[in-house]
Length: 402
Image (cartoon, rainbow, N blue to C red; front, side, top):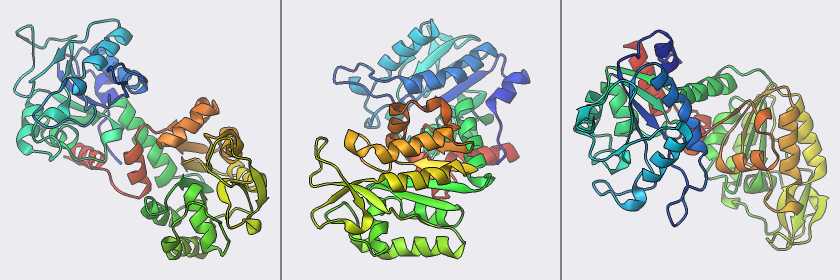
């Protein structure tokens, strides 16, 4: 897709002296005292902020945080801790401004070149979530250039993510969003074959549309977790008391048929790791998939299945990974996910991974630098896998063409 890149505007000298409005994703986790417990998103946003400052812009930066009530700014919804942390990382103060929709002024003056301010939680503004034109137009008047750099919000058409892009003089993608678009295009729109997708999770129902979409495109569709259990039922296997959705067996069969008609496949586990109870210290038992007992819980794929899937991943040209294939948080049931992770890391394929549990597995096995691209957006990443055109992508493409 075609879109304007903020990096190109900077390189072309079109940012100097301009007012730049950056929509970032600074929705970081905090403890009960308001202390930031993990600052990856803040660190990730620094590239765009520095790019704008170095290009000679006056910079406004905003984000959502938590789930505030529109029109009410509570202390726990304030971006104050984020502004402090960003200031520490940048080595300069980052003033935080409230009530900014009708105008941004710092110490009574218009924002000047080289200055940076953070604008309070954008979801406090009335009309934000409903993408109010009135609010979006006011935001657009604040800037010369709007930069969308929050992929985690790209699936939402809100005033600060979509509306402002429609009305701002220039709308473009920041470095984070541009990298996401490039990685997604490389993995799904123009993949090097074979294309292998790993989709795992507790329920087929939450990812049924993703599975159906991928079944039309991928060469191997690896399923894991509760999803794999439902597919095992569809293949005529017993799963004991394992998590599954028996009422969706027909849908699972439809996905399997769609793959078969294309000469592709959904590999069904041939061995599994089971326990009698769902506990970290539960005794683990490895057995053939045909030998699962009525009181068994399947908590991981077995070593034979893991080796077979790892071999397929080693032959892949492109890998899309969403979800661990077992209860990797429990040491006795992490073998499958560990094998998958290491195979992806060792493969020459271009890999893109997304989803909270997937990122946790990547961190656990220390393979961050071996993944082609790690997506920062959970819901947005899933919607892309469903084949949806995200609102942010749509408006940026239309603004580029206009």
